[in-house]
Amino acid sequence: MSIQEPVMLGQDGAGADGCRPTLLTAPMDEGQAETLAKVFKALGDPVRLRLLSMIASRAGGEVCVCDLTPAFGLSQPTISHHLKLLKQAGLIDSERRGTWVYYRPLPRMTDRLAAILTRPAEPESAGAVS
Image (cartoon, rainbow, N blue to C red; front, top):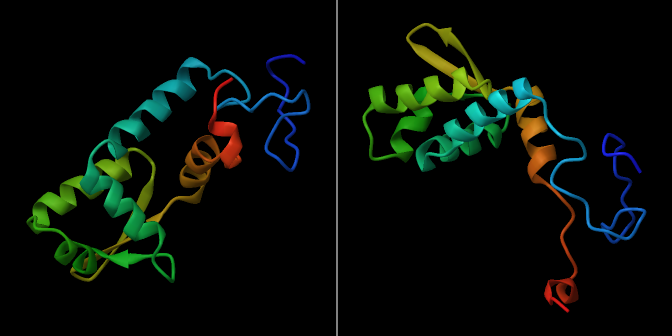
């Protein structure tokens, strides 16, 4: 199997050759690595990680900044700064409506991130090393 071919997974999460899948199925080029590094840098702060989680899990797909700020012991300008960094990383988008700004996740990036980070759970017995 060439390194560029996608890994096909069985029901147990193992690849066709019996090996566990790697984090990625193909190496990243320089541009992809730079983009993803910006995303991970943006998510490297617990406040930003929580903000993204709150935005992405919101019913209706968007949330007003006025609903985000009270969840933190931080000022509104500080929350806005964190949201700006998430937006610059391509994780969220915003729309101003009157005096309020509404945020929504950008599925192309959040789905890409989820695909990289999500892999099948290993069976309980697979944790032991022989």
